[in-house]
Length: 69
Image (cartoon, rainbow, N blue to C red; front, side):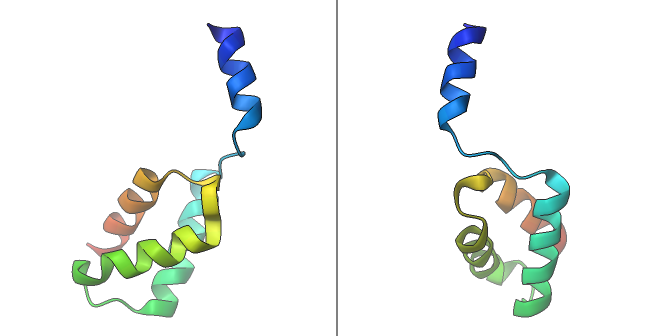
């Protein structure tokens, strides 16, 4: 199973570190200047557009929510 995981992982895009993702989220929040959680979707959309598939969508949403609270 571990060998299969290694093979599958070799086809997946490399994931960003949490620190790098936090930096992108911080920058996008500074650009957008959202007015609370109501604009969370706008921030998430911009972050996803920038990082593409190199970050998990759930992790992006978690980091954005933490930043906006």
